[in-house]
Length: 243
Image (cartoon, rainbow, N blue to C red; front, side, top):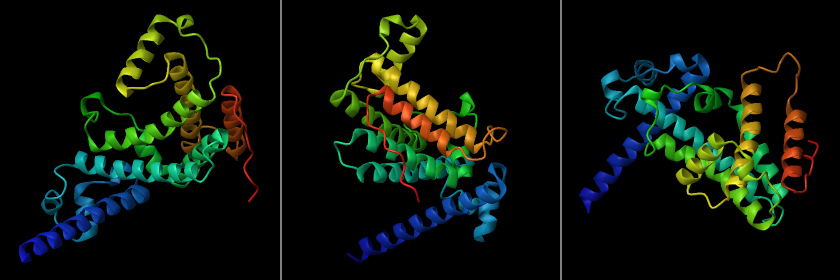
């Protein structure tokens, strides 16, 4: 009994240190950007040695992966909470609430979003399908994909015929369907991907200030995108309540 208690205390201390390491890395990211997040910098901030940090994370890449997984989980939780606050039968409201939660988190966490999505990934270091980061990313993706499945099953609308698409596009959609084990028909899956590209692209341009030449406030632009998304799927669109 005493041995189990001692082991539990050691594990709790380890988990606390792991969390402190990731929290420190996140603060360095915000203050100094990605280049400021090094094992030695994290160790210095925590009063540890570099080799001591390596007892918790075997490499810089392992640390980065764990931190990015935290970001995905945080964003996923915010989106799920917004979705679940809406009645199950209000499909349009649930979809727009999820999207608005994603934008809200993104614009208040631009450094984190950029590390998650807007940085190029070297093919040689691309995370494997079994990595912590990829699993967290798949859970994030599932929030959207599950809603589109629900919309399609309960409120299907005509989509562009799959046979009218180019052979290359057909091949890629079928490969994605196989990877995600999606129950959506390929034409609906293409509709989902097209919607995601538009939402994600707009958020990237907002975070990276690529539209500052034209817009000082992108919220109404994002809302137009959501209205179009609802129209495509035949869903009701409700404008956000004035704060």
